[in-house]
Length: 84
Picture 1 (cartoon, one colour):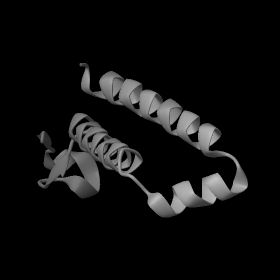
Picture 2: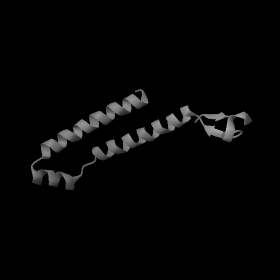
Picture 3: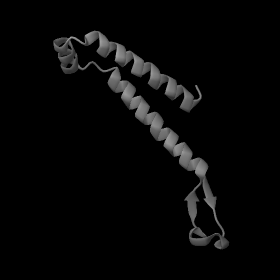
Picture 4: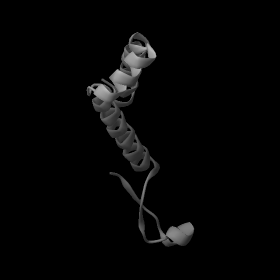
């Protein structure tokens, strides 16, 4: 995490350490990556109750297709954020 030190002439933040824009962006990026990882884990977890509901409603194929689409989207977004 990066911090910037401001002199007394910089107003209310004078003499205190505050997180710089780069540090804040990095923290937000890490939080978004963590959220993506959690969502991918959930999407790859078998949810029998949901699958039974989909079968009852006749939309199992659509549910699995949407799940695959979401996984691809999140993996692409993760790669973009992490630079992989």
